[in-house]
Length: 276
Image (cartoon, rainbow, N blue to C red; front, side):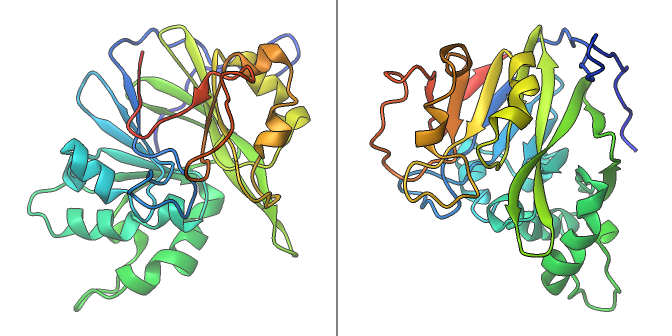
């Protein structure tokens, strides 16, 4: 298992991540578009976090992820770990590529797979086994390809010295159960970042995490209002002090809104880099 960060509770009893005084970390948005965005306009909203050591954490691994990685000169074997927030294809569709690319590269290490323990079983049984299970002479499991690091319900793990707190957000209700996504709250060099992943508009649920953060990367639809993502028309109603630290991503191609005029930091651009 990946080690957990030291625990610290605020006066209200809410878990707070102790500051990690790191430097030289770089966060790159491989894409900042919606699930169906094409490469000519943008790519799916997957991120790459690079540590000073050179190790790389892929945050979500969507169907198109190999294309922006290739443009950056990053190979599958360069990835130390991948974090999975939930089971939609724009967040896991590239895992077969990653698994086979590392499996059949001589000497390559298995990438670490970090995800809520509640996702690991369904990830294999409902998504990956159909393709990755087809190995000649081998009864394959998910551990054939990945070094598993399931995260328990407390939701804490550490990668390259950075303490991460997973935040379960509401994505959709499929008629039988809630299907969550797991956002991330983490601190580098005195800056606390909250990355929502895919979430409905839920200002009350997310209020405490937004307050804790210095920078918020928030899921944002700009076209058809699907109900399973936060929509721009809802996000624009947030308080000014909240919008002032919020970047918007996961939007449809060629959005017509002006987020800076509306008080946000802006739409994250494909390839945009944040240095810490």
